Length: 59
Image 1 (cartoon, helix red, strand yellow):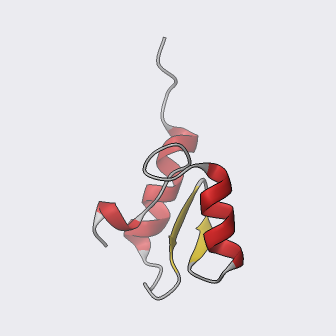
Image 2: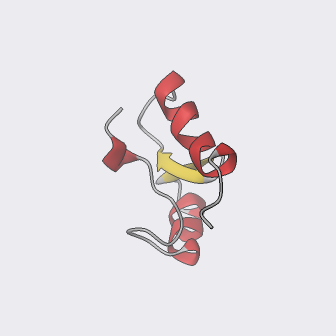
C-alpha cells in the first residue's frame, strides 16, 4: 500500500470530509485514519493506522 492511500484527519482532507466519503462508501475507517474502500487491508495498512496512536507525542 502506498502511503498516499491512507488518509489522516487534518492532512489532505478534514474530518468532516473523510466522514462524508466514508458514508458515501468511498472510504472505510481503519484505526485513526481512512483508506479507499476498493484497496485490500493488509499488514502495512494496519501498521499505518497505529502510528498516530502509538508514536510518542512531540514536546
